[in-house]
Image: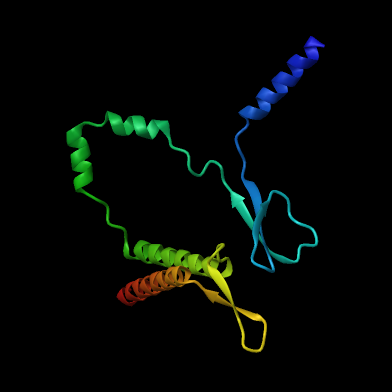
Length: 162
């Protein structure tokens, strides 16, 4: 019996020591706009399913980099800070395009997935209801649209320079 426990413990320790791999979560949006999350893909789900791959190592700090930064002398650090690297025109354009893609995605996500309380349902004269965004939600959409427009202008300006 003791040997079995030792083997089980060793196996558990080995599994815990393995590096974390990407995890997948599924965002489920039903016809009424209700959002739920699942670790397994749904079967026969009548709605929108968005696969989200999560890399658990994406937001880890490197202790070595922190020690290296702390070890630098104040003068060396000041010299390094005084010479910021300027990205190339191609790199700036790529960054602007990435910013534009992110702004478009944020706007699309906000439109496709309004939060609870973002939409009011008003009655129609002939019966039924229609969705109407709240003032706060409309301001959010307007802000996201202006960010998309700013990013588009930035991309166009950088493209004209090339």
